[in-house]
Image 1 (tube, one colour):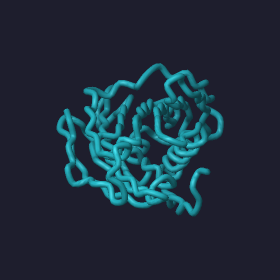
Image 2 (cartoon, helix red, strand yellow):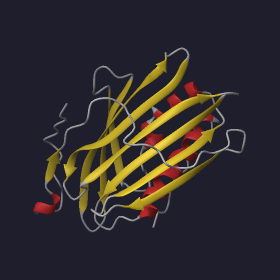
Image 3 (cartoon, helix red, strand yellow):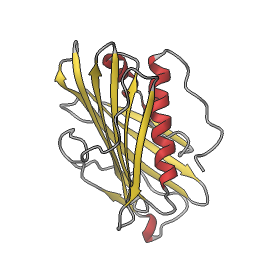
Length: 217
């Protein structure tokens, strides 16, 4: 399915490197690839491990695996909140439109703006569903997100999240992210994914999300 948003014009530049592009969101909810991050002991404190590197074409990838001490249903609720999953350090502002795609239990678009030397705007489309079990007794929840419109300077921005119920009201989170954009480093992926994990933990505990005052770098 192709998401088109003609209204997302860039504010400060009409150059070719910042033109709007529309990309196709792949069907399904499968992880982007096999997750190579080491597993975390499910009985240990809530933590996450990462592996990340850069490919020859300049794309940075990250794999993460962590354990949240909460029921999968509570983790699903956290992942369904755009405030939790959005890289709030990396954007100046964002808005959300819910229920943008049929056939998924969770779907929303986030319209993101980053104001720096230039103003860049783009859309991330999120979709997720229980893929094992059901909504009353979930076993596995899968989520995908991808940049579907906006500045071509953000060449690749996509990810997958798989949440799996463990024994003892614990949940494993498996995170994968791909990012290809100017001035990107591994630190950007690590910072965002650590924030995402931490905010899922805070939300399942019923605690407030942090208000960030600094960027990742």
